Amino acid sequence: MSEKFLLSNASDAFVLSVNPDWPSIIVTGMIGLGSILTSIAVAYITYSNQKTQNRAKQAELRQEWLKEAREIVFHQLYLYVMS
Image 1 (tube, rainbow, N blue to C red):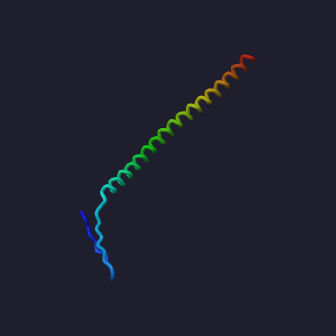
Image 2: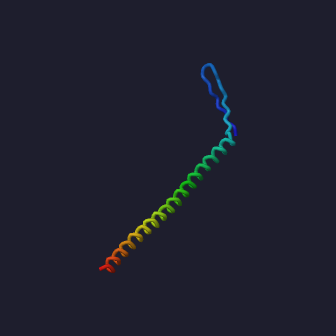
Image 3: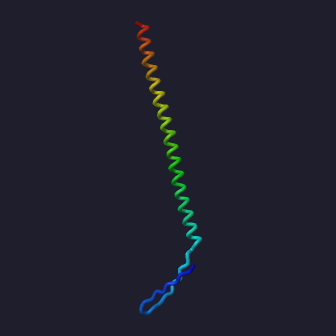
């Protein structure tokens, strides 16, 4: 599919033939699609990583809470036994 355009002014005339460059169009489309897929992959990895970090932080807080609870219980038990 070729279109021709006549461009002219008072002294010069040009005929411009426009043919779509399909290989460039296809490559550009593939690059765009690759960019979109990469963005989706990065978003998924970030989301998964964030969930894992949240679980790790919850476990850390739970462990700290249990440690403090044990210290309080053992301290109270010690005070009871010593009195």
